[in-house]
Image (cartoon, rainbow, N blue to C red; front, side):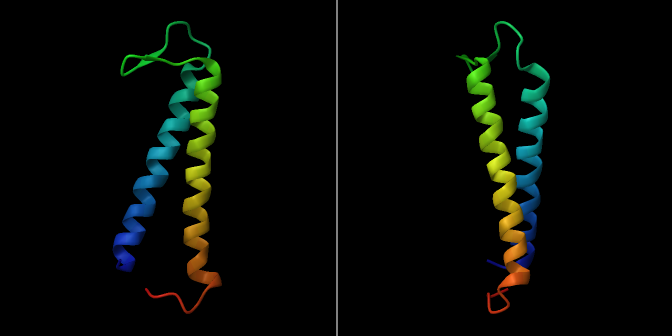
Length: 74
């Protein structure tokens, strides 16, 4: 994978994860929350936000690998 593609993919994943966290921060606690016909409880929303934060952490890890592992193909 080329460096430009990796960079673009990182941005896309980061923006999607950030949007998920912001959305669920705004709607957590509201009654009757449904997404694609699936009822979302507060616990499910927190787990989804945790997964999105883990995705953001994965992006940061991948970004930092470029600087801590100089022999990686670019």
